[in-house]
Amino acid sequence: MEKNSATLNTIQREWWKEAIIYQIYPRSFKDGNGDGIGDLNGIITKLPYLKALGVDVLWLSPCFKSPNADNGYDVSDYEDIMDEFGTMADFDNLLHEVHELGMKLILDLVVNHSSDEHRWFKEARKSKDNPYREFYIWRDEPNDWISFFSGSAWTLDPLTRQYYLHLFVAKQPDLNWENPALRQEIYKMMRFWLDKGVDGFRMDVIPFLSKDTTFADFPAGRKNDLTYYANGPKIHEYLQEMNAEVLSRYDCLTVGEGFGVNAGQANLYVGKNRHELQMIYHFDHAVPRGEEHFITPAPEFNVVQLKAIFSKWDTALGDDGWQNIYWGNHDNPRVLSRFGDVGAYRIESAKMLATLLLTLRGTPSIYQGDELGMTNCPFENIQEYDDIQVKNAYQSLVLGQKKDASTFIKACNQIARDHARTPMQWTDAENAGFTEGKKSWLKLNPNYRYINAAQAQNDPNSVYHYCRVLIQFRKDNPVLVYGNYEDLLPDDPYLWAFRRSLEGFSLMIVANFCGEIQPFPLLSLVERTSLLIGNYNGEGIKDALRPYEVRVLSCWE
Ligand code: NOJ
Ligand code: CA
Image (cartoon, rainbow, N blue to C red; front, side, top):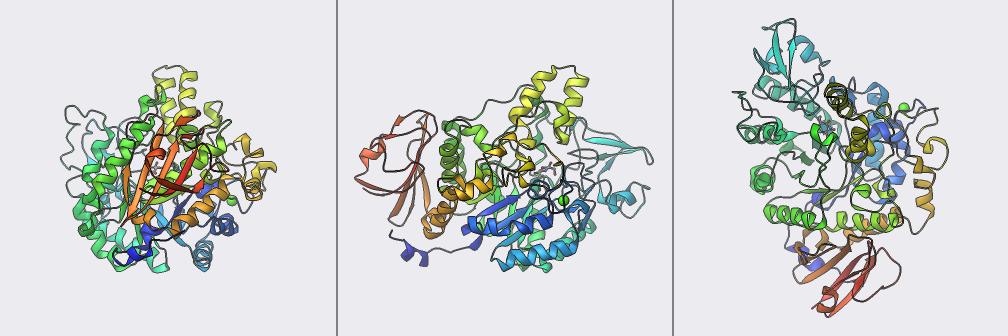
């Protein structure tokens, strides 16, 4: 097809806008030594698989030393590797191999909090005048803030009889960004990794770094509103300092986890002249997972709401900022179980969702296993879950408040993070080829017998091969990166149809979000279209879309 390369002279190209990110949750990707836990050497064996898929940047969820209260999001040494994952030599080897294959590697920067087993915290809790005391946040009295993982956000430390703040579990004390010495330690650590050749960072709950240091109770109307912790008074000062001292000195990719940031605030973080981050990802379509949702999950978004969310963000960022587009990650259940059909139309709906991911405006992130059409896992009881959030919610709701256990498990089967954390399904052999050992650290989804990478690689109609083709298509068509986004049918309850255009060249993407044939009014309005990519064989019905059908069309009006 015709490429719109003429326009590329007029736009400022950025490799991080053109890149496709693939998220690896190391614990669940590939076990290299048979202990049932994924590790760095395991990842190395699968690099050819990732290269063949066509992704450019691998994001590793935390691989640093950690007691694993929150699976690595509790770091006890930022400059060392988690025992289960290997050694620094293994890491260096992984980085080398990734680069050899022409890909990049970004790490997870978890600096809102550390582990309570970090040397800094062990020192800090020794006495009120310890040099590390001010690396954390201490108060004589707690306020009414709550932890994301149930209970108060403050824990009394018995020795010095003060409370320390932890927005997550007690083993994740919040770092005190007011303290310049702490900030310098973090910047030094970031340079350590960038100097090794790491290509950037995904930044964990980055809008939370700055706190309102009066630590007043939640303001009226926002009681228990966890987004209240975001966008503190000095957040932009800190990010600009981090940018000046570290990020601007490297050609690296930065993506902030934008929890609590609304569309109107986004460009304060990612606007071109802000000198903070390149992109963030928002939570507007993430699964709400406050404690109450473990009894009563929020209703899932419908397609009208989804379109409104994506339009709002696209408009808000405009030509100034940039976002990271995702359907799933290690904090959300599987997208296919949310918006697709895990039964008869599993393949079609997985391809439809992949098409949107790779054609919306923003840098896409594929979450491991979504390229195979992996689904939520049927966990049967609390013992089968691993996630600290689930365990703490169970403690609070079922054991504490005596809520019905089966209602709780039912809710978990819809919203829990562990659905995305079950091991990658590589083959139909025992343990899905994830481990050679006897048992994987978390239950395997029994559907690995038919959903697995070996099957997908051998099947030309697989979701995997479709993603591969689409990834290449995106690389060949800069309109999908730089073109503007226009929602063509914002009110249609079943279809998502949009146009991406760049200086006279446009592509139209039309998707049916339901399991029935839907009439598609726009096809007859556009004089001439030609099908470039679709998830069904053949041209299909002229003025209608089949169940979960998606088409990428070039169009002339
Ligand atoms: C966001 C991470 O993605 C999540 O997995 C983690 O539990 C919290 N931040 C705390 O680090
Ligand atoms: Ca292992």
